[in-house]
Length: 284
Image (cartoon, rainbow, N blue to C red; front, side, top):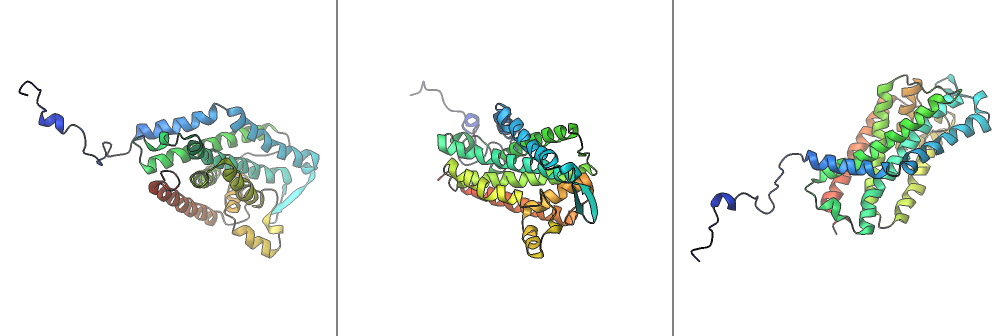
C-alpha cells in the first residue's frame, strides 16, 4: 500500500466538479463547428438545395413575364403604376429565401431523431442558445445563398429591374424573414416525429401563407375583409418590406412591418429556446 502513488491535491481539483460547466463563457469554437457543419450539409447537395430552388423561382418569373404577357401589364402600388415584372420579382426572391430557410431548419433535428443521431447535437459542450443560433444561422445562410442566386439571375433577365433602391432595407427584411422561418423550422423539427409531419407544415402552413401574402398581387386591390386577413399574415410584412427595399413602395408602413417581424422573431426564438432547454420531444 505504501508503494502506490498518492493523488496530489492539485490533480484532484484539475477537473470541474460534476454539473459545473468547464466552458463558462460562449463556446465560439463549438458554435462555429456546428454552424459550418450545417452549411456544409446543404452545400454538399447544392444542386438540390440552392440551384434547384433558384431555377424553380425563376420559372415563376418566366411564366408571368413571357407566358402571361407580363411585360405589358402594370400594377398600381400606392397610386403609382409599376411593370408587373418589377413588382413580382422582389416577392419571388424573398419567397425562395423563406421556403428554403424553413426547409433547412426543419431537417436538422428531425433527421437526427429519425436516424438516432440526435445525440450528436445534444452531447457536445454547447449551450441551448449556441445550439439554436448555429441551427438558425445555417438556415439563414442557405436562404441568402438561394436569394443571391435568384437575384443575380434576375439581373441578367431582360425587362426586369431588380436594382435595390434601399439595400439596407433589403438586408434587414431578408434577414428577419429568413430568421423567422428558421425558428419556425426548428420548432417543426422539434415537434415532428417523421418527415410527413414536416411536409404537412410546409404544404399547409408555409406555402399558403407565402402565396397569400401579396407576392403576386397588390393587397390594395383586395376587398376590405381580405385586406384585414392579409394584415394578420406575418409573411405579408416580410414581403412588403422586402419589396420596398427594391421599389421604394410598399403595401404597408415599413417601420411598423419591421417592428412586427422583429417582435415575432424574438418571441419565436424564446419559444424554441425554451423547448430545446426543456428537451421536449428531443431528450424525452
